[in-house]
Length: 427
Image (cartoon, rainbow, N blue to C red; front, side, top):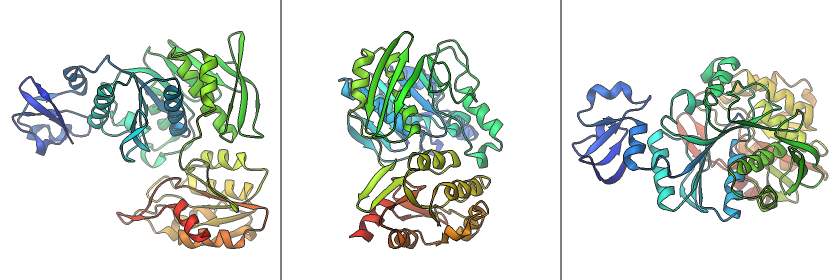
């Protein structure tokens, strides 16, 4: 991309693409493009130098959230709370980039290339933002896509199996996540997770099981999420319309983070939580009658959390697994669906270059009770079948894609949205 700037040091733009360089366009050197450095015939700058040139290093507080699950909901909750407290704030992540309640960028990578992040931070500052909340993926940490950024606060949600197709082993995945928390800066760690190594200096914790700075002492999941948090010797309560034990963690992380930033009294933060309605594609109710829920869960742990939150209901679960990704998680996902669901429908979910039938075979290996199993590779037909066979008291839960609007097949993105398909079929 090209970032236009005021004429500084003899150039008026910055690019991360060596083919776009010119006498007036500087080249930002990153971990991804350094192999093209020999082709560059212009001024070369680092990400840190880019931030300094633009004069934005100390003008905004950057909050980074990493973890296998919960990044988007936690980041969105922090963004919502800050807005509710009359702060100007931006949010960058899987859903795109939002600045003061306006969407500026459509869905993209969880963490885009560093120049794109810098461009979004610059735009946020120009819009008067004091805070920039961003999701940080393990890929971004490994590929140094956050190089040069100074975080006011770093947050860990959890670490479970994911992206082993890229990182190789769970130990390497944990090691990459741990690198994000090596510095002396402020950090907030899920105490109950217990996998990450981190620098204890500047660290606070949250949790429901183990002693922590922000400790859940009581909670109810009967109607949304209600809980009491203890911080030192004081108690604070909150209520949220979100559902599920996993969202208890996401909300407590958001409350704790905003409190650490010293934005407002914690009582006001807890009050603001009640106004956060969640994220599209995360436990999203697409239809009330019949009850159909769509969620992004695409890992064993993510599926377990969502289905556990709904375990009091009789469920028909529709799901698949992505192609060109960690094969080891597929039978585990099958096993989890089999454990919670009354009926299981296995289908296709972004097969990419793989044969979707072979992906389904991997999933089915984990399903012991084949009597409840139905296989339908066509995802629309699978959803249609679920709606047809449901009994009066059963709910339909469609997992894996959330608010994605496409199926990725053989290098092509074919328009497909689980939610729109449900609405079309019901109407």
